[in-house]
Length: 286
Ligand SMILES: [Zn+2]
Image 1 (cartoon, rainbow, N blue to C red):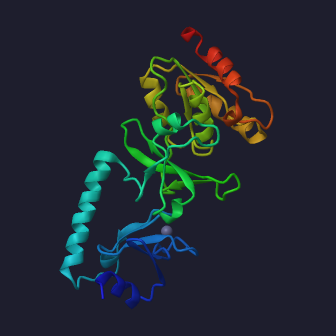
Image 2 (image 1 turned 135 degrees about the vertical axis):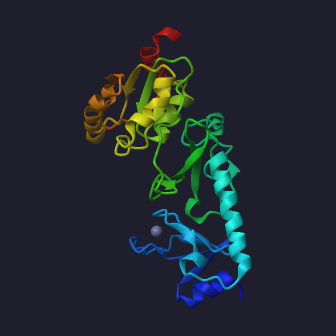
Image 3 (image 1 turned 90 degrees about the horizontal axis):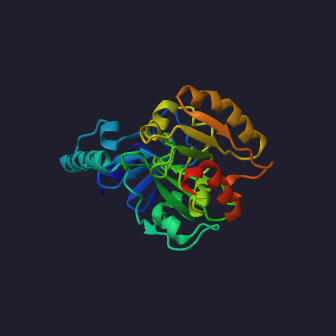
């Protein structure tokens, strides 16, 4: 029997086989994991919980050094992973296939620019359109996956879930002194697709406050001086705009709020509406 499976069974862990991994309940004592979310590599014993981010190696975890081979291999793989992470950021999930069709009104070309993909091999990402979210250095820091069904639940998954979300994309349209900040990934994609390229999304207003200075830095470095908030037209979005305005102003930006009609979000704006917003925020370009 293979050493990893032996260890799993010896310690009485319930497991499922999932591709190249065993799937067990998380070993992090602080994570009550009812739905197994810890993946253990069948060969190396390296594990990673995609729910809480808990990482390690099963051999080390149980203090077992019976066989040299898997441990050596594990070390090598870990080292390789470290190197890859350093150079390229997060590795794309297994079986990533480029997305080549339109989706929810966003053109295939725009989806290609943002390197949309799907995968049938990574269980958690099945039936989802996935986007590698990159930081200003070009490294992928997280994959954001939206369910392809409009009633799919949850609508979005961050992979890994513990990632700190940057503003995305981290570059405003080149030469622009202004940036339009929206809440959701598809808000950003809709505006971009319709020709407004000095736009970024914050993946929900709750996480924006965290490391705000750092998130705004790339835009400051590019010469952006004014940020237009265009959050969802609902109460939550409007409240968030009011709360975040002074915080962003404190970082040295001029802030203007663009009020959308009640219950409308930037993901629903038509070409005509986006054109008029673009003329308003980038008058020098016309
Ligand atoms: Zn966990």
